[in-house]
Image (tube, rainbow, N blue to C red; front, top):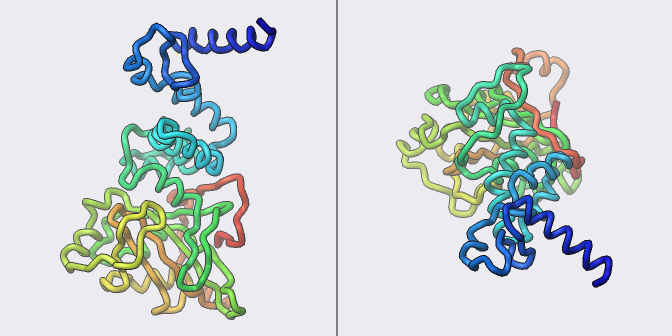
Length: 305
């Protein structure tokens, strides 16, 4: 037997002893030749499929979202582990206070990140991770989506998007990601996104249902693929949303999907220095902001500061 073959056998022998049995790399299970196929197929937490091992590996690369997307495409088992564990860990690592708030917990300023919340979140962890790290662009202005470098999400901004009767809801909204419009237009387009906490029990959803607002036929949520309501068509966009974004009144699109994800875009007004002093966006957001960042730079868009 060659030295390479002996080393390979030692490697798989060591892996199997750590997993509680002789592992077979061919079937991805935890049993050897003498173990029934049913027992091998039922044990998916072995070798590279061990959730703890994968979490440690991805923690070392800062939960790179592009690498995570690649791993999720390898097999159904890896995709299941990614959806259940890795995307959740990414969300917690990027926005711990925001995730704690969305899942019902409270994380004081300066406190270390909490352990990952158990279970699921409405819309799924992959959708929340995409919302944190991906600007959906503006299809109406031919602006494509892209990964963002840094995005700031704020509950204070979220309150500006809530109608007066819905002010009890908790909504995080990002600053608009500014894009130059193809074709040389003078104005820029701002794309923004956000997420509700507990949308199924929110006053916003109750208002939409009470108004019998129709779901859009041609628009889908860019984060979870669910159907959406147009908040403009439902008459639930307050003037404070335009002021908060610095947009022209009446030139704003604002959608909320049935899972509680928000996305939209607006035409940004050219503000003078006097406008900036009276934009109504005062107040200290330091305890209510959350930054979600990725190591990759943005592809042409920039997060407004």
